[in-house]
Length: 125
Image (cartoon, rainbow, N blue to C red; front, side, top):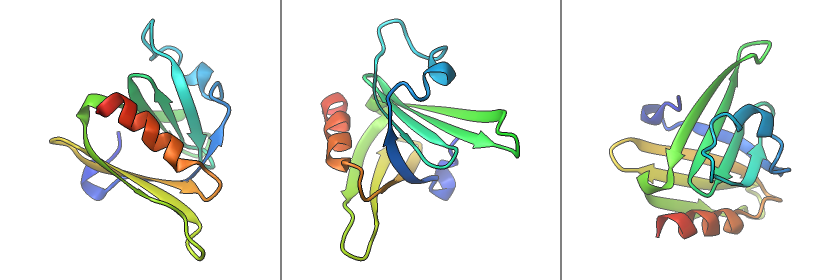
């Protein structure tokens, strides 16, 4: 699980094909739940569906141990976006969840983070 108390950070995510994590998360998806977008760092991933955000934290040397955290959009009370700048190569998205804490996602500068904000806005507002 994401450690919300230590400000869990998923670093340098880039957009990948939305089916990239299909084999991994298909068992978790509801019958009428659809994947909207997927992002991956070196081993970890974040999947946005039309119901929630699923984080995949790959652990250990072999990567066989994996940790999944499901963040329903209804839990998000506030979110903040910082776009990449001239000397800052990362975009950052912070989600604040009622009664849980916050999590930060860092995206590569080529990622359309405004698209991600539209997804979150669509399901939280």
